[in-house]
Image (cartoon, rainbow, N blue to C red):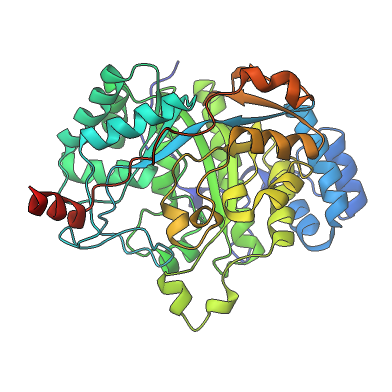
Length: 439
């Protein structure tokens, strides 16, 4: 396996048209100009170009897109099984200096009553509850907390890995890796290598939003730029870490910005598969949630977000275009279970997670703020009613437990439905003060 030493090539080295649209390898592919011919090309297993994707986005009927997306799904993940994961999103801190305009989760001031850095005792309880419910993974992310030194991250990962060896650790989005670069003085590769040696198994795709700096400079001006996100993931692939790619739509972006994002992902995936034999194992997209955020107070507030129809259209286009990323996941936390079930007919082969805990999109008004998790029987019901067979997976999409079309037959295989008590919460400054006062 090759060793990653340099940085991933800047996207501006690739071809773009006279209007600045990024086309990557699509610049060297001939394009069709008829929707029917493009869809037939997809159903035959062909790769589509940037221009063909633009035409499909603008003109193709949603049902036509769904048929082509499902054909692509069968080419990459054949069969009638839809997978899901039992896991928990754990936030080690909500203190962040990045000030993203779409985030209601973070607290800028470390002394804010609602700010926290969860101690190991709290994180440990959250992991134990996850294991009790049949969970196989934690997805751990947090803010860019300038008070946390480099040793904090290494120690935390090592402690989780040695204390709970049965739980998979997917942690730290690419922008959090850059925060560690900032406080450690190490390179991105060195940070990732040290984290892997401490027990890190995967890197979530958070912070992707729209991989186009025209949009990133407007909605998250202090955050990592497109090339940085891609570079971190390229190094992660070189180390064999499990990774996912994400995308958030509804930032008042144009179709070209969305396609630029997809093209950059496809090019990176091609490069990683070529150089390291591995890359992203899944793609997940959702719509931006703006409740309680600065975007909600913007004069353009009514222009943010995306409709279910737009989400489904984008889901199908992404499945068609990203012909080298095997798994695509529906987003019930932001879309609701019914739209997510429809997404299974738009090329998705995965229903996501039970979401034992989720705090980030919930704070911005996502469905998880009302329904914080979905039980395994309910996920099974949604998958079966959509016409598929449920199966629990792990992070690597290996099947942990295959179920059948008959819920009665599978009942004995189900994990515990709920915790004996309330789930462990985050130990905020206000709670710490209350604990101190009570003692």
